[in-house]
Length: 568
Image (cartoon, rainbow, N blue to C red; front, top):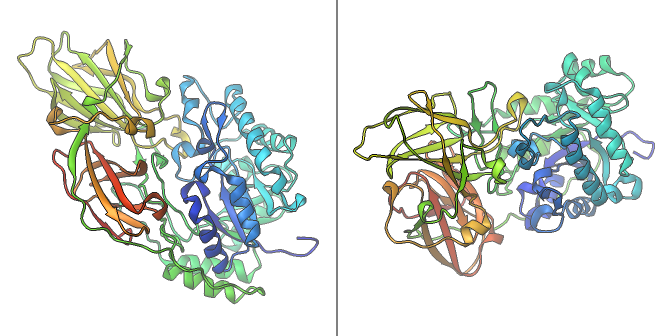
């Protein structure tokens, strides 16, 4: 830095996962743990809200404002703009609208993919180019792609990306980030780019980087103090001994590093991604991105935070400030809920199709699709969905039959015999997050191919869209009574506040669905756990009357909702 040795001690924050009102607080918390740099993932699909339409101003979309806050707090920035980021984020940050292209190939030089990437690079560069350290800003390095050596080997694609950034005014050094193995480094690093390692926690990793290219700096671009959690798992809570050992090595050897993540935040709405490592596996991520990080989901320091702070203090010459005051939390008296409406009263006009089509073909990202047809020929027996992405409810003549979950490949349901001449089959499918890592990322939602009954392909479908976005929720039609065995019902309640504060809404009385507070989508909940409480920042609450709306796919009757001051 300015001709002198500089050790990057970075903590990663994701502006898209943090309410803008708390950006400064989280940056200050990072600085107070001893970091001098903040790594920033930029989620492309959070900024390009529709093909060719970008939002860099509303809510927490103003990336330039976040970077300027970093500078105000005396922090440098590692910019991680993708276009692919992984990050346990829906589709790894890529816009789901790309999946409307039937034979799309991603993370390569497919011209249709690269046309979209070019637009993104142009728009983001216009926002951040002036914030490079060469222009007096805090950005010191920019990452090219992300962990590409784990996915592909098109070096010309990586060079094309770097050249795109350069063409659009990015002049600071570039780096790549890959596992510290020979094949990953060979496939993922490009000449002249610094070598980031995910992670570089010992001398062996740095030796591997030196073997690949001794002429560029190497650093640990993702050092993991915590880990991610999928639905149905226990909360990931890795032992602190491992991260302490890694940091002692990195600090004592003056190696640069980035803590992934120092604070995770929240997968609000439908932003959580999923993993899959076989064609029939599906592991969706929970709504919280607490990550067992040193700064927890609501911005509070953990014992891990203070352990790492004390460790960093031993090795740095600069003064580490005290942490800022905590954000106030509140609990709310139990909220009474009542049935309000259902999906069945809000279907709108269908799209007619000979065969099922996925959400993306209908310009829908996530939410629900209802597929409806009449049974002709076979009218009972073994129904199979090819493939349910990701969670389906099957109804026959308005009666609930069973659920079908994507994971594991068991996609069959037994349809009983009925006395109805032309039985009506309804399949309500929920998308639960596009796969964000590895080889199965082409992951369209809804029914991706066809439906068979005793091997016969069922034809002629009416498809109803229910995107569950802000517009859909705002325009719900209230309705009395329940249909379809009470499944896919909206429950509504209200509560009054004298003061606001952060809180968690406890959904343990419900089964599976989505929660909205004052129109803000807090995210998904599911009875299989481990998450039963959903985080709501104070800025989404207001003094006076507030409204909570729950869509539950499985629950027949309302249950009161309580609140808590913490995730668990």
